[in-house]
Image 1 (cartoon, one colour):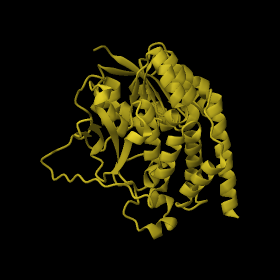
Image 2 (spheres, helix red, strand yellow):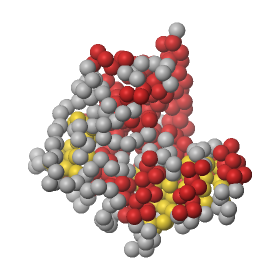
Image 3 (tube, one colour):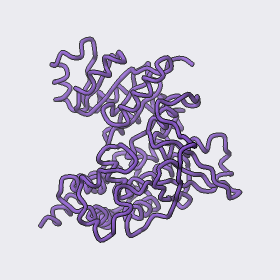
Image 4 (cartoon, rainbow, N blue to C red):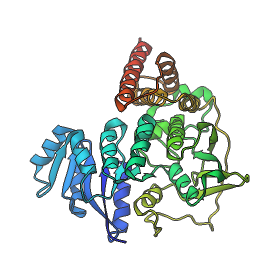
Length: 388
């Protein structure tokens, strides 16, 4: 197998740094052609030198200017803005693009990479939630492979390999339950952002960790799974699995279930995407069956996780509803992290935004982005009213 050059969009986040650990473990099979981040240019200095990266991009032009002025990137081309991220994703030598940019900033670069026939290791939930219709159509046209990085979707991707579609009855996404799975319901309105960020199993960014506590993340994953695996929303289930060892299950038409198990470490799904279909030792702790392992599952409590119900409704409605859900959630989560609203207000704001927004079938990406912008504005207005 020849060396596979990759580009990482979101190189300074948890997915990006874990991706670099996987590349480090397989230096003859993987190399880094380009790195992109939003503004944290100092965190690119070490990997640029270690992996001999010749091109980087920073979405924030001011950060790009600071990086150029620093003198730390001699012989390195420094691009900027969304255009810079897009150029990184489309570098001629790149074979796989790791798309791990938070929010909509990764949409244009990822679509451009698909058109350029790059394989996409997809870690940004928002892309399929907002633009699943357009991304999957573009991938089918270009032949680009969409390889899911999310541990749940990657597990299903592994389980579905070589299985004909008629054998698949249901998909089952597992959820840890987040930081408050055992917190009394009456206390949820008083929990703090610091408490919400104490995830029991995973080391993730703030937004994803809060989403895990509300289970909005699992709702977004239902929408993703619908596009990735061409499965009706009504055939996608969610179970609480506190240990985060079973990453997903597939129910077959004969009634049996198959599961994918590994420790809760993102190196496993990332490596699967980068080396697919090859399997090699992973630079992460392996599952030791000689240790005492308890595996438990239970249905999610609707009263504890109203965001899951709202996401399922948005997924069923379709059109721009998932984009509205995602936008409202992002704005509400930011407000909670900033101490402007209570934890329980997140679901209330999403529901009110969905209720007040008009859902339509998008005919273009601009329709989706308009719905996203309108929902963000509405949620921000609702937060202002809460403050008074």
